[in-house]
Image (tube, rainbow, N blue to C red; front, top):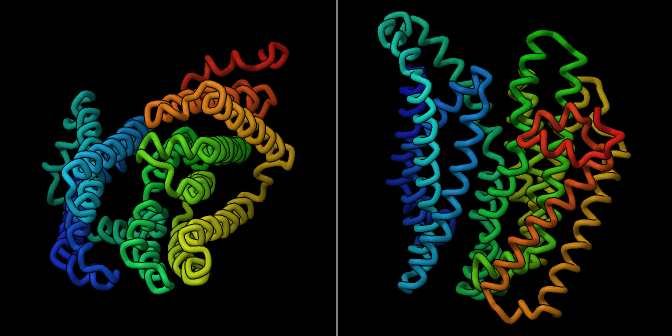
Length: 452
């Protein structure tokens, strides 16, 4: 572990150096020299990520996903809060949009710091430093095995890292050509920057929604790895189906729910409803990313590292090319559609590969019909609920406060309705619900005749 931390930290330092001192050159490549300040802020993250990554890998290697899950949720929550808080404070001071963007980017650093603190507290509370200390005493043996360790980290680590760069590749493609395509197709530079800023509102919502959607399904990955090593094919297939099933259910519910309430959410977070239609399209990214990330984790648990990495890497040129075709015609809506098309293609590729590798049928048509029915009923309920609050109760006149009330209550009520339908329609068995957080409570939502 010590050698791994040293190696990855060295790689992080190299990345920090490249991005911090080469920020000016990279910004020019992105057609906006003022972006250098944002790149320098982001570069600092490379100094903290190695520590977080190694500790997460340590716990996942032992089959313990709780520290990883808690640190990821906390990281994204703090990241979003930092983005919103610093953006608001800097906007009040009327600084340049680039400095505001730098403040927002700082959320990546604060999120990783909090994740590191949480992981360190697990290490300290469980007194696991004692388990790691002997590695320091066996430094000579570690150096002898160093060649093998470094080779593993370089090739397998690179494959795993590429598999985890799903959202980064999407954002990178938009960073490279969204603004330039808008400004080169008849849109004034300042307007193009504003449209790009509104488009970027969707990023924290997508990432937070994706983490929430994958948190439960990823907890099943250690079980999948264990069943594979134990060569229990039947149990392995069951756990794989369950993980995919969870990702589809939560991803669909989060996507459709956010799409239904995107206008009040937009007002609650950003004071106005600009770009709500685009953000509504972007909300469906949660559906695809939750499935993709779950399948990637499953395939890694099955020992298949390189196909997911190749598929995720292919996302970048695919997204970049679709941007070139769609943005000149549809502007930011084109960028959103290109993201959905790209992710849809990658989802199909990974789905078919997983299905072929296990030689099983992952999900039935009846299952998808049930999820679709639950999503439509939730959508109709939420639209009716928002219409009642805005037109009959007059919450539309309350501005941001009213939008916050609408959003938070809609999330709560819509989530309950969606899960009630899913559980009542027996999408999950009683023993499957027992694996989830608060599973004992969810079981009570089942019909009495379906409980043991």
